[in-house]
Image (cartoon, rainbow over the protein chains, first blue to last red):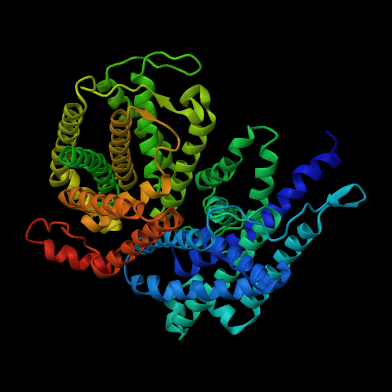
Length: 290
Length: 325
């Protein structure tokens, strides 16, 4: 196998998959760092986002790319709503109770998807898309859009976190919640912002997974482990770490097929997760350990 | 005859409650007494079921074993195997907050599912292992059901007595101390990590035993025998509703939730087919909602954790204030 083949069949799909994981992992890392619990419903929230986009495509007849912002906004609202209805009153209790509640939410979101959209696999558009040929590199348009969207969204988020007042407030909450509260940061607004960002990115992640593969009720749940592996690999609380982690996990999953049976592709993320917890729980970019 | 059918159904339900009660007891050791979040119950269950199946079935071509051992050896093997799977995971994850264990246990369950599906040499792949002997299985149908129920109950009572005894012993007191105030327990010289590992492994062994009882009751085990997410979640809601930290609560919760679950299944099966599938998912939604409601309105469950000793009230108040982190 020559280098071009390796890149075409393993590295490029790995980067695309990694970008999808990165979008979800950023939300996970923010929730983990600011709200301080592992959000187990993140994958199923991504499923919901993907199916909301599907509903917009079928109902309005628009192109999937126009459905994306609709799905992002709707899922962000759903995420805020879930927090208000189910998580908010658990805030004073040990954080692990919220983790448990989020497992229940995962089941509920999935049940909603299965009731509304059924259990069959769906796609945004029919037909096979042939990849374009760029000097021997075979890349599909949607793959370019996936990576570009990830870079734009995460870049925008990074600007927001470093430059704007509310972004700084979020980072302050992540670094030292007591000090942040003492200096008058409105906890409620920070929590809401976190959910808006996490929910929106989640929908984008689900949407691009659906765009590049297909939509099914379990698609998000199966992304949960890679997303957490990415967040921990990059360092909890580090946005750029989550992107790096996502890309590493995505590429590692695609490359793993070369050495282990393809059934065990999904085990790669788990292996990375355990390995990081064992040797460097702070992650590559020195994040937090809760 | 209608009456006989009803009795059979009651027996069947009772056996399942017994098996789920064992799982809930196992989870109670992990969560109720050590505060460990295990979201991979179905994985340990499956390990136990397959281990016992491999050990106790007669030799078969195309897969490892069976070893044709007595079922008691199979059940012990199931507990050992589940404990052996729990050990490395606990070893790696219990140094951190329980969130990490939650994620890793989801991963373990997923890997176990993959192994069961793809390692045909071990598990016979999608066809599963059949021909597992049921103790007292060669007498008449109903007698055999009754006999098995007695066996399940005997195992359950034995597990309950042993676990309850441990909880009232210094070991149980120490575990609760670690759960409620890790720093203080550590300052008293308790090896927090090791003790948590103990609780995690004991709990996992009970879950493995539950799996073995299930496999021998069904006489077969296939990858599709249980839905991992649903089974794991049912055990969680059983424990939380029944009362985490209370062994009788865990058993009561298993009975209540399983009865609700199986009666609602009968109800939805009567619906016309076009609604039946949707009704199945609505049941899942409602069971998820039930957890949210219990967590919000009755977090201590139906039978709250007993307050041991006259200082119990202090412990309760300190629990809400000085919890982890």
